[in-house]
Image (cartoon, rainbow, N blue to C red; front, side, top):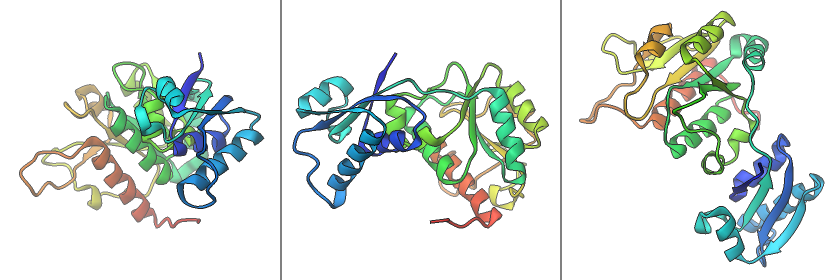
Length: 257
């Protein structure tokens, strides 16, 4: 069943990725004349929509409010698209093997918050992760809110929904990855002191309980982030993003921009 994506970054990246069928793009009347700044993005979205063969409609902002139910967060644009298509286990394993020593996979254990999920997806895509593996239940999925929170980054990601997360981790290990849980264990090495240069899977746990026992037991080890203040842990998205970019630093990767 079609769904409505919203937000300029989300709609633009969906059109750029070309992985979903885009039926219609709705834009607020009077919101595309500018050639610079935010309005220039609307011009680009319109051009991409035309190339994709999508129908373009000019509507009153209230129409967008009603369709997306997010108020002004739609930023004057929404797109009617097919649902997000998840990857299979075989596709994910093949991606890992093709990436070789550069493989980087994010594993999510029961993450619940759409904003955290979207932030992690954006960080993962920017850090060069090739896939995300997550449980197929009791966890947030790819919704329009998540697409918006990720600034459209999820549209360029391969996401596999696993029925059994420990087993999925084992499959990643069999394809050559070392898998580490981000967990505040006293004996765990600091994330900055571990060698993260080879094929790697990083497990981020839920906002409340962290990484589950069975998932942790399947991992090759744990990594901890130093906490110097009075609180015990970081936000899941922040913690994951910190370690993802430690991987980038250790691998000596520079932007191709």
